[in-house]
Length: 270
Image (cartoon, rainbow, N blue to C red; front, top):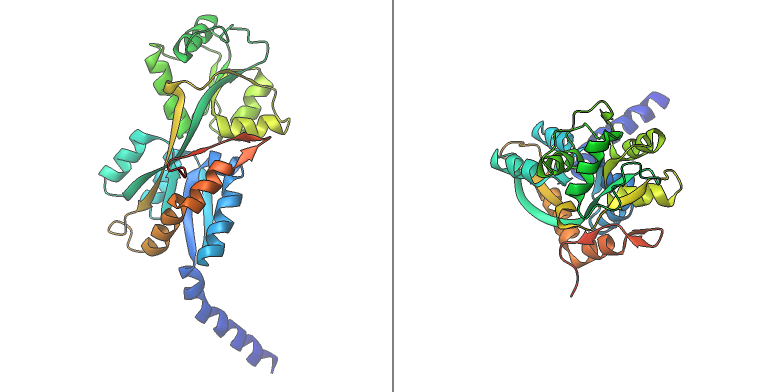
């Protein structure tokens, strides 16, 4: 009797498996959407509306796009425009849409030994760090943040190669923690910085922010089913539609840490 019951139960699970798989979406995304807690608000709202569960993989943008190229994701949310354009041009992504933005910030020890707070621009701030050969911690993980950081050094006309310039090879949260311990400067997205600073995990201070050069654009991109036949194109499109809907955009705009907004929706309600 027991063996018949177990066999029946196993058969029921096998029959249910395709349905369960059909209602499960894989999102490859930048760490900032996870570290801040934004996904903990967005994804349940989508699941409640659609019945589709979203499993997310939080990594740097470069790794997120690599995961999608291996056909191990159905949709991506990333923040490195040049990498995104290449991903779409190579045929791996379709229907790239602006989702939201915030800003990158230059942060460092409160004492500011390189005196970058007085700099008139982030370019000048980076020049002061280089001239002082002050400790600087890079993500070093081909993330959107590292791509932006390297672009900023290039804009400042500087090659960051002094001994105190180091790479963490980690996500944004661990990089901020390491920079705090090392009393180093680093580039962070404002959302992850505010989340970590508001919870007392770091003492780093913002030294440059709210500049056009520091704007941080996020996009949502569907994985191309022509390249990845098993990609759940219908569910991915429904997820994108939700993110860009008034409901999804309102959730993004209303999300805060310590009373401060972390992201600005691309399509705010008028």
